[in-house]
Length: 212
Image (cartoon, rainbow, N blue to C red; front, side, top):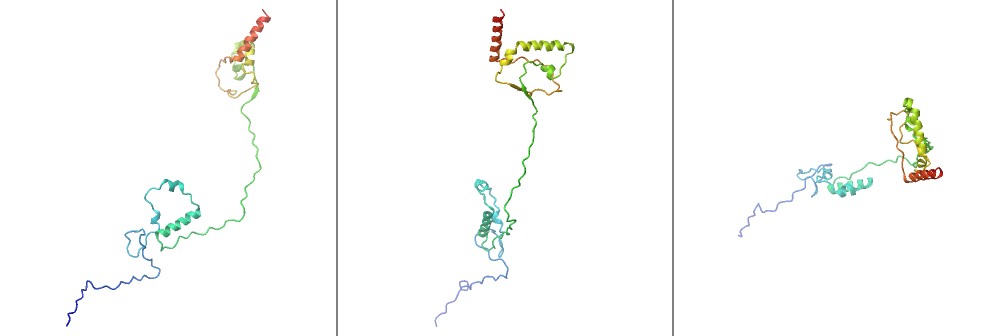
């Protein structure tokens, strides 16, 4: 009789194992390549794990992406789909229409604001005692003599004062101390310009020629 071949139980073909039957509503198997390495059987990865990035964002991600709200929602849906294809898509709430009327800007009547300047514009002063007339200084008994001396001085220098700036017809109180301010008694030397000096010299020469 022919010898019967002995079968090796280790090499015998094993029957295919049936896939585990999951109860209704249980999560499906984990797709290959999905995040969540080290999860147990039947566990699903965290869908928000793909949004957590440990590397710092680049310049393009910080300053180059200006998505609208619809583009942002679509990008989040795509990231969820790439992360876990078996999970349901992200559903955003519907945006209710607040109004159907066109926007009307508010119309206000024009308002007028009157601003008074803090300075006064006047014609040029050729005779002025700033210490006594503008700042209120009083030297007592010698004040008349000082004012008279300043008047004679301004009279002698009148041509130079008139032609120092012949195109300027007015002056302003801007830059001067206000009445009542504590102002020291100062000396104000005359302003000398080329045109004023020539006018003063011309008047002196004319007076010498007229009254030799």
